Image 1 (spheres, rainbow, N blue to C red):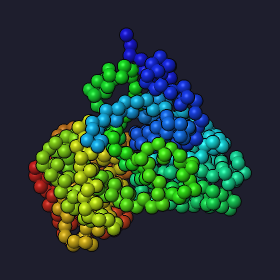
Image 2: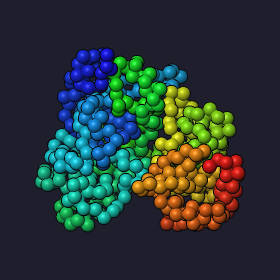
Image 3: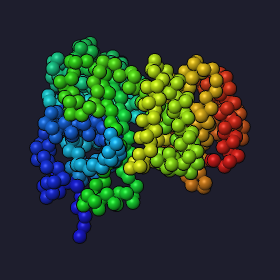
Image 4: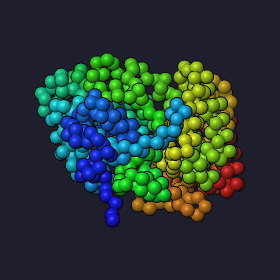
Length: 495
């Protein structure tokens, strides 16, 4: 007998999977979401589904994918239903929860269904836009807003908002609440500025600019939840047997969840899903939440991942079970990153948060693949860790040993051995691994220029102010420490 797939028909046959499914599946669309990745589904979509269950928000999400790859067929086959498995420990209690998330109503491809996405702008009930397009997504580029679709995410958003402006004659009530979740400091403010610049560049009119400014709310936000996505094949098989159905969109996450949204009282009624879970925080200033998360959780990941991966480890959990690696990330987090956060924060509070982060990394239920953490590695290193590195020097004037070691491992990880059709690969013990980073071609050329001259390579890389926004070679002792660590790693064949 074939195992059934998760679909609305299955929910009818097995109502215990989602007892309120008929009502939830009939709710109107209220959110346009740029992206359908695991983070969005594991956090914002989680809160929306939970609020809908409680009868608070009562709205669904239209998901827009930037490409036709990566699961459009699965979304279609499953009518956008997906299983969310939560594993972890909360308040000393083990949490193992599986539920079907019904928050997404449709998933549309921006590449092939842009006209349908644009048509959503005509829906008066659709008042919220959410996005997660990675750190490199919020950038100003030369774009054609009449294209189907525009190239950049801000271009797509500008075109969408202009369509809405025209559809409702610029009425005040047609303005939207836009909440980007990209890991960019002040992401809402930066997105707003780019949208306004796109509007001016394309001469969309002062009335549109005024409508954007007066009646739309661009809210900076911060998301924090480890959502590694689909588990490995063995765990996936066990889960499917437990669930009794197949689900190609199943995701795993930890229990911890935080979505801090920076805005005023005027938009709280629109973001009513916040009432459903204490993990949503709406405040006029989220700087402290952002700095703790960005520097300690994300920053420790970024400084550690290459060292762990090049040591032959596969997951964060496996790394935390390796004494030498656990000691490295513990010392890094509590004694180098926490004291150097470039924000006014009490050291003990920072270390308390750091200890929580380390406990989350130890979660025995989550297998977070190290290779997935390396996506857009250079952008993450620059955004998450360079400010902390500079702050460390300002405060202490000494070489942070573990930051230097982590940076050295990053440079070795970025050594391109193979390239095919625009894709780049490194090599570890004779096996290729993907280098999914916009700077991969840069490192390819760098390693070709300095194949054996590590000193010259490190000097060239650290002094590249265009890449880092500052000259890292000027930090006393840092260049030498990175060079020495690279030599030691290579001598130990950590390649």
